[in-house]
Length: 395
Image (tube, rainbow, N blue to C red):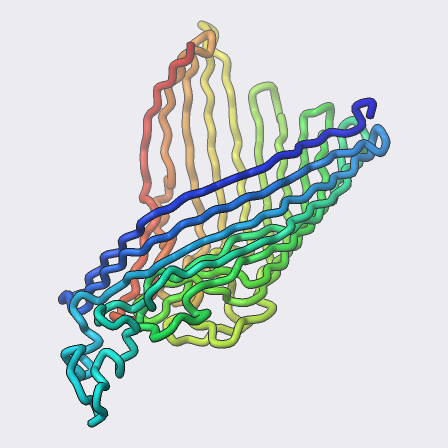
């Protein structure tokens, strides 16, 4: 069509199988989770993406992907110490005539599902899930001038579902709480990409909105960290990115981002460590503001080669690290400063760099867990101030 159409058409196939073995012992080895699990996934997809130049300045974007997945899972989790039997006082598992009922034993009373496997939490048998979805994308690109382009896009995204691989209590029969459904996201974006001042200033701006259905989040259920469908959520925000060539050797990079994120609906019964979650809770891992500025200076040397100096400052707003917004796991706003100096030999074949990250030695929790089953809150801290040196050679 006289170079009016660009397109990509393709197919995708994926297959894997694995054996996952969780082995978790709690303090005093009172609880000994032995969790061998067998999983498999088979997925196929076909996709197409078209860019149609309606005019020299206006391009229509259209595409889609059809995905199909088939998954299997068999859970063999046991408690090797039989803690549930011991703390209930109904022990051993095959103790007969419980409550005076002939043939009723402790295993049946406590709900362990598999005769002959008194410590196994999962019902016997292979479980399967099957997912199919069509994911469209549409958009427009308009080239207003040689230095300015506007665009708008709308698309749907898909994150697959799966199973909970570690349980806190035995399940006499299979039920829907043992797996979680796919998450879908509907996104729209409006933006501008532009160059100014004879290409010495680049400014890109984007405004976006995303709506999630069945958003997947981590939840602590008893002693078990699990994934579940928390409900529906939405976020909107904007991003501004700029790059300015202030002089021949001096460049300034800067960016600003804002996100307003909240739950629209929380599924019934969703909680974290016994705390019921509602729409007033913050979405985890979602700072409201983020700002970055990065000056760079390149200085030519009279005897050849050059020196390059980089400074990078990033501000990230406070955020919650977990679904239940545990106070000990909340992350305050963070100021991060990195810097480096690089010497390049003539010809750009060799360079040596020295630098440092987190120069202010900011310490904050990057991830954590409120393990209510043993009344323990723990987290992983950020790296401290670090120094590095790098030598590169190219041929």
